[in-house]
Image (cartoon, rainbow, N blue to C red):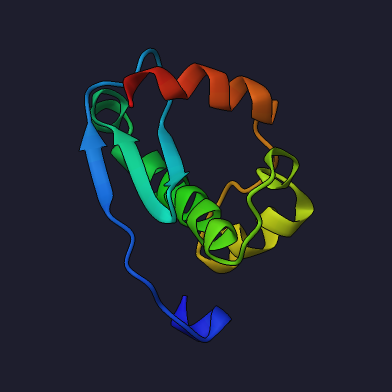
Amino acid sequence: MQKNFGFTFKVPLIVTDKFQGKLYGLTSYKNGEIKIYLNKKVMQESMDYMVDSVIAHEYAHALMFKLGHLHVEDAHSIKWQEPCVKLGGKDCQQYVDSEEIIMSKMPFQ
């Protein structure tokens, strides 16, 4: 992050078994606090994918939140894809509908 964006910031990375289904990760923004959650269940099955794609994907969301891009339509936009790639993500295309992501991931919080 320092190399490509000129600053660093700390984001808690929380591994949890409270996700439902095969969701890999979630970055949350609540009351100015950013947290990254990773799905422990799928992490055990797909550690390489988590390291190669999911972590950069979620840190790109954290960066977008930090920069003030808080709108659902920014979630997997071109604006988000660039930081995802710069942070080392190997698979930074748009994934699924942003509204679907938010609605399916939030129950565990």
